[in-house]
Length: 195
Image 1 (cartoon, helix red, strand yellow):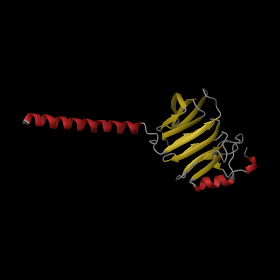
Image 2 (cartoon, helix red, strand yellow):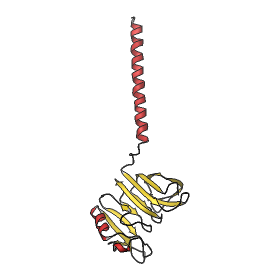
Image 3 (cartoon, rainbow, N blue to C red):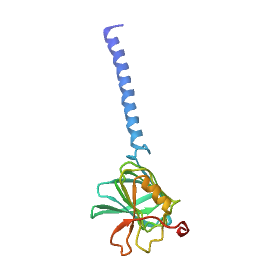
């Protein structure tokens, strides 16, 4: 073998190895982009009674970056520090993931709200829905605020035991006062009051 042939043989091997490394990096990057677990630690699943094709409004903090499954964005605008997003319901059970610090799903006709992980989520507004002790679940957090019950017309309830459980997990459970002007501590209600 001549020196030229040796260099050519080595060059082929080096180029083949470089191609394998580059393709490996591409596949790794793509798998990270499409990783369902890459949700910045927040995972919310909700079920609405709104029909497929109807519109609901979900609000997050102005700089939050929600990702959804089962909802299709129709419109968005910023107002008073909130990013207000109108979504068309594609599936009645939907997911919200991503970098979220505040979430408002009030008046969305929710019959279930399950927050599996809340790495950055610390405020949830879910009043005026159809939630109760068995259809609301939240993880442990530090200093969470749960705006659960609106003024007197809001029929959803939690038992005192569920409120205690949520407090033990770091959530301050709140309700609007009868005039609807201030949020006060919610103590829960008699289980017979739940539907």
